[in-house]
Figure 1 (cartoon, rainbow, N blue to C red):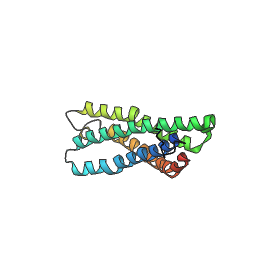
Figure 2 (figure 1 turned 120 degrees about the horizontal axis):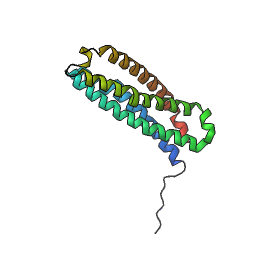
Figure 3 (figure 1 turned 60 degrees about the vertical axis):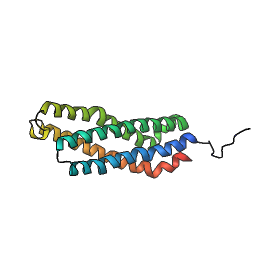
Figure 4 (figure 1 turned 180 degrees about the horizontal axis):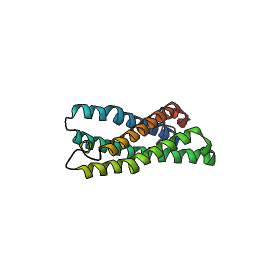
Amino acid sequence: MRLCYPVPMKNLAGKLAALVVPAWVGGIWAVGYLAVPVLFYGQPDRQLAGMLAGQMFTLVNYLGLACGLYLLAWQFGTTGRASFRQTLFRVVAAMLLITVILQFGIQPVMAGLKLHALPLDVMHSTFAGQFKMLHGVSSILYLIQSLLGVLLIFNAPRFAK
């Protein structure tokens, strides 16, 4: 007896790419604009809220690394070197670059400032100015990444074709 699957397997990689986009962008929006603000609003201990927010950003960044790498690999696999000239490829590459900067550049420095400030809260230490500046830079980068994500969401159906 032979089993037949009615689901067409044609362009499965493209359909997966179309699913990866909302997972990545939705994660960015859900963490940065829903969960973290609620956390800081509802948690009276700002140090604890900051630690939990950092963990959430780390998770969404690792999700972004996986999604971004998959999307770049998929695009390159379907269009070859021409993908470097495609706007969508550049948008994904820019989002991935921002993710790398946030995860491996800014977040570790901010975590180090928090450690150096102990037992004080970093905002009540001599490192407050540096921390505020890095927080501002990371917020701007996160906003840019979120807006680039809008372009991906609007173009996600193109992946599945």
